[in-house]
Figure 1 (tube, rainbow, N blue to C red):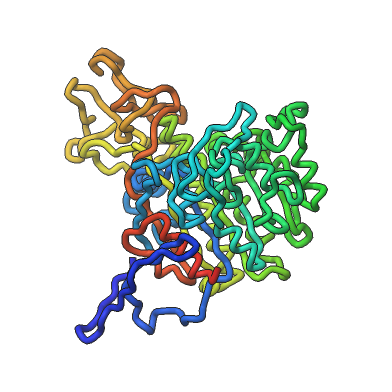
Figure 2: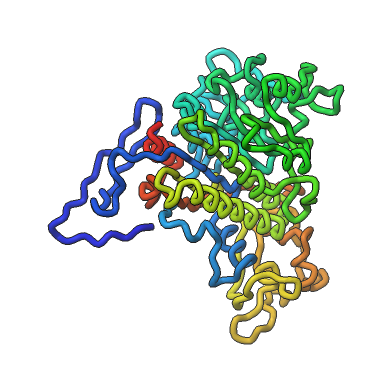
Length: 486
């Protein structure tokens, strides 16, 4: 956050918070000092929106300690402007990813499970073939930042480690009443095809991630019941296609105008499990997307959304090490993007980069633990047992048993008897890649829930100084829209 020193003779000008006709909200904020404020006519010609799915404040803190120690910094920590975002949805105190990301992309609050539709849309579960029927009069589509960018002649891209039809990426380019209608979501990406989202005009230029199953018919091992081969349809529309790391590396940004990369049938691998010879990293995909989009001389600008999507999945499974490593991989993608854009746009005078999360999880840091430093092969760090900051001995619970620094409010590993009835935990055991941290409330496997805490937001570049204070998630839409002149 930027701190302003103002003399008593300077008055802070506030505007009345209001809702724009397109559903975006404006926020009353103090005016910048004229010497530090960009020219009023300046606007970002490149926008990169980073979304760490499920990346709550505790997760970012733990990831920092894991990667660089307590006194280190992640790239996202160094961005000059920051604030906090409320994440509640239209109908729930604790949101799911669909309405939370859609709020950022559209400026409209909507119900849980709904993807970029009006606030009156009811979530209706799709059929077993992942197709939906929202019913007559059940809401209407609302414009997304990506669609607005297309209408201005910008190049656009979506990069994720989840299925490209999953809730977060889908909220940028699709409109459905339920996030699980992934066959319908995939069809909205194919220019000229049935169910195509015409607001995308000639199509999203770059799409990288997982989820091939919703682009292929059942006869080819996919999940499409309509028999369509969307990969073939995309190729017929002039898209380059990559199904693995080798074909991804072969994409030449100078020669390929549009490309789709679907590297796995479902979600891409956790970064700890990723085979670098088969799947590109999030940083790899981000860098190539920027090279393709920012290099388009026929376009007026660039809008790119990048999701670190598997942070959320690891947290649902209470696999802290995998969640923290995916957070670090997300942070590496942020650094790669800043470096790439600094080369193209020194000082980021025409570029806005925003980093945030859609919601929290129930991960907590327990006890009065001593500083651990970063995690290394010989040091479990924040993944290890909590040790007293004075004596260095294991901290113990009411049963006299050691416990981990990281725990969860709910999750699948719950000791239902006295913890003294089970074997004592060890640093080696609890710092493993597949160790499920203990939870206070028992849940089914993979059933750890989202949390309702505010999330962090940070920004750098043109228009970044409007990212500050406490924001509603719908307000972020208006800030980005205004900064980019969309």
